[in-house]
Image 1: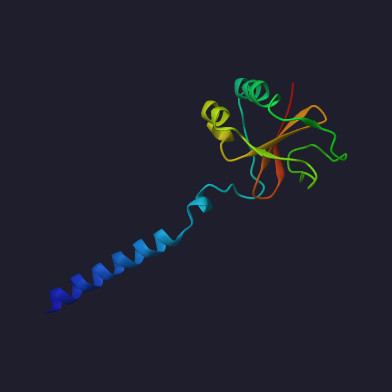
Image 2: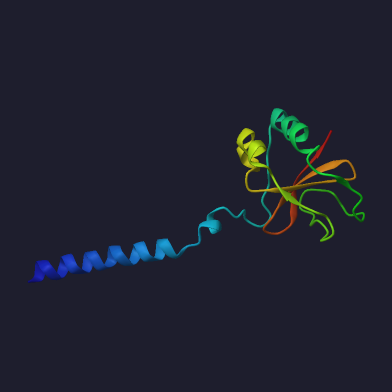
Length: 120
């Protein structure tokens, strides 16, 4: 009797942990933390410029500080990094990008902050 009770308690504990894990939304693991940094090699930076700068219109957005950590204005049109580019540079998979004043901005979609500024 005692052995059955132990088995039942272990089974209940396992089932409850599976339920909690299943309740976590899948996109929560994909979101980047607020204030994250993006480090690219020189080759990755050149590839990102080559592959992305032509995919977005160079916007004349209101003047703002285009530096890492700055929030992009709401008027700046962002697009997700295309899957072809993300395949070549997996670090870019979770980011958005935009061109503004001839600069390629890599942006965290969670908080709209710039994580990388690339110039040609």
